[in-house]
Image (tube, rainbow, N blue to C red; front, top):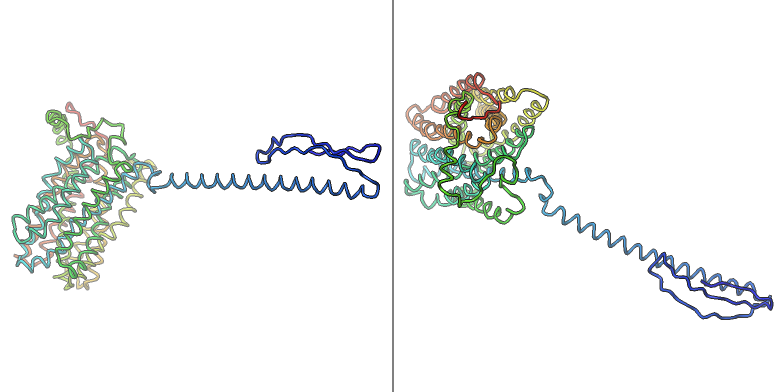
Length: 519
């Protein structure tokens, strides 16, 4: 810093003191040699102004350099912050709670599941024309899916408990997707066609138990209705997408295209999960503090046999609430599977709609079910969080799920002179409200026993698959004999809905059960 010192002879000495700019590291230390100049009265003011101007320029240079340095530092910090934010939010699901990733991935698998289930209900119409099948044969082909579906329920629940629901779900998706893609190659050979649909049923049959195991181990009670609704609601979304895509694909590319395309979607899900498995884990072991899950296919056969013997089978079948679930599942499946398989044909033949119109109309019940599912789940969880007994909530929801379609089917089967679109609206409303079962029956397995939820669902779903085997084929047989949709399709469903409601209200319970053998 320069100091101006006047002398008696009117000369001045400017001394330069070396003071480091410790407060800013961006200005270099500069030293100037001392010099003299003569200050006369005439130019005294001018010389001082020159010195003052130089000091101001130095200060201005200092200020600009400091501001530039601070600006550069702020820009660098902002870039680092943006990079941190980008890395922290990509992929988008990275920062989501693990249970949300689990639910979303499982729900997507269920979307593909029902796409592969409903594709035959549309393709069966041109297939029947091409191969000359009557209603009995068409019913046999559609029911073959449920043979494998029924056979895989108990094994699926047991395997989900041993290996974890995630592993079982992966294998199930791969099996049903490959089998779906093989249908066109085997369609002309009836045993091969039936076998392919049995394999589709086996793959899809293990999925509900696998999903139930995941939900029971990872989702708290107050979120369970929404979790079950979102995951199993994927079935309704899959029905909508399958019914939307199937008609244009069949008309433009042939009926074979729906099996090729939908099968490839499932294979893509499987391969995608292998890639993203590190980010989105479906392994229940990492999400639960329940008993450890041995998630390895190297587990010895002795251990598997021992774990099978440890299941309290006797206690299950001595419990009245379990029997209520079994019968309720049977009754609900009778109406659901028959409508899923036969409604497109009903709309085509009874209401005189073409293939595209029948498919579009068939979309309405599952589309409405998507909204009803969210409403029912929110209602159930809110009631439970407010202190309403869980059993009461499950009974209310399941009663709505049974009585609504029973009333609507009764109105549709009675000859009231209603135009076709009113019949469609009535059936849509009834079948949509049947989705309340996801907050009723389908939550009760987890409520009773998170540990054995997958096996309990395997038991009830095994019995629930029987209507798919017997009911779908029986409907086709009755239709050939009576030529009446009211007798063949609606009357049996109404009966089971009514009796299922009574059994559920009397015997159902959501109280936790230990299921120990001595009880």
